[in-house]
Figure 1 (cartoon, rainbow, N blue to C red):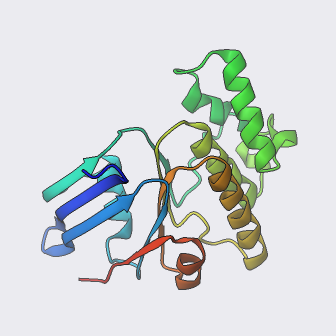
Figure 2 (cartoon, rainbow, N blue to C red):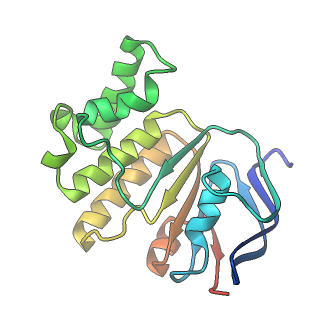
Figure 3 (cartoon, one colour):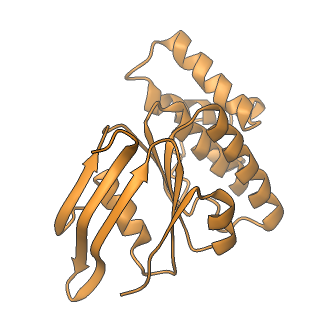
Length: 202
């Protein structure tokens, strides 16, 4: 794989019974760029991310990863309800970092998404937008090379969506990752994508 590619997909196929979702998909995901996978519901966008992450198995083809360290921001926030904001981020770091280093990293990213004063709150005490920002901070705090984002701004009102996209871009510019972002929103795709791959319903 060429040095400037993080992920290469070769003739990737996936079906569910008689329903073909992905049919001979070929993509080169460039390193340190935001690649957007766009298209309507049912075209296989989430399935593609799940196969790249290993959550689902492909039927055939190849997925070549330069590195297996992956962060995944799902459509749902997936915060652990009985852990505080701080503990939710610590949960993905504690096996690799000592306490002092972990505290520095968590503080850094919570400050960047402007949630440091909420670090001891449970998810139930946060708004939907705040939960989304915690999920983004958690994904960046984990030192992965590849960040997968599945409709991360879906369901937010326009003002909040704009705010969270701005915070995401600030994080991305300061701490470059290879990002694969799934969206059905064409304007969002144009705004965020260095490269856009459209998918269609089979």
